[in-house]
Image 1: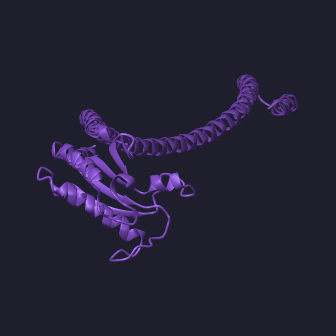
Image 2: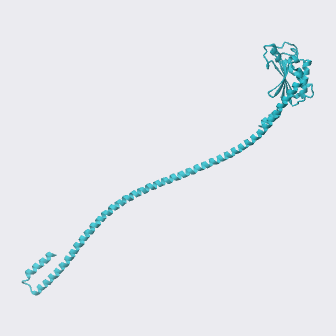
Image 3: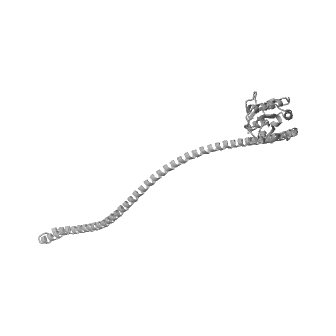
Length: 319
C-alpha cells in the first residue's frame, strides 16, 4: 500500500506542471482519500498484527493447554486403564470369592446336614443305649434280687445239709470206729462205709451190723424226702477171684451198690426215684492200694446225699 501511495505521489509531482488546478485538486483529494484509506488500512493492519499476535499467544496458550490436556489425558487414560484392570481383577477376584463362598457355603451346608444326621443318629443311639442301660439296670436289679434269693436258698440248703450231716452223725454214732464216717463237703453229705462193716470178702451179702447201719441211714433219708441219694460201690485194685454171676470188680461194685439200694428201698418212707446205684470198681480210690490198710479204705460203699437243685437251677437260668 505504501508503494502505491509513493507511486501516485511521484506521478502527481511529475504531472503537476502540466495539469489543471481542478485535476490537481482532484488528485489531491484522491490522495488525501488514499492516505486516509491507507491510514485505515494501516490501522486495520496494526489491528490484524495485534490480533495475530494475540491469536498467536492464544494459539501458543491453547497449544500448551492442549499439550497439558494430552498429558493429563494420557495420564487419565493410564489411570483409567490401571483402574479398569484393577476393577476387572477385583471383579474376577470377587467372582472367585463368590464362587468359593458359595462352594464353601454349600459344603458347609452339606457338612452341617451330615453333622445333623450324625447327631440325630448319635442321639438315637444314645437313647437306645440309655434304654438298654435302663433295661440292664432293671435286669441287674432283678438278677440281684434273684441272686439274693438264690444265696438265701443255697444258705438254707447248706444249713439243711449241715443239719442232715449232724442228724446222720448222731444216728450212726454207735458205728464210730467201725469203718463208717460222715462228712460234709462241696454242699453234699458223704456217708462212707468200709466193706468190713458191710460185706465179707468177695461177697455182696450185707451182714447184720452193716444192715443195721444202712437202716439207720434210711430212717434219716425218709425224714428228708428232698434229698437225691447216690450209692456208689468201690473196690481195691485186686482182681475178683470169686465165682457165680460176678465177672470182675465192676460187677462186684455195682452189685454191692444195688444191694444197698434195695435195703434202703425197704423203707417205704423213701421215694425210690431219689435213689441211684453206681459201680465205680477200683477207679475212685481214697487211699493207696499199696498197703492193706489203703486197700481196706478203698473197699467201701459211699452214700452221697445231694440236695435237689431244681429250684436253684431254675433261678440260675433266670440270672
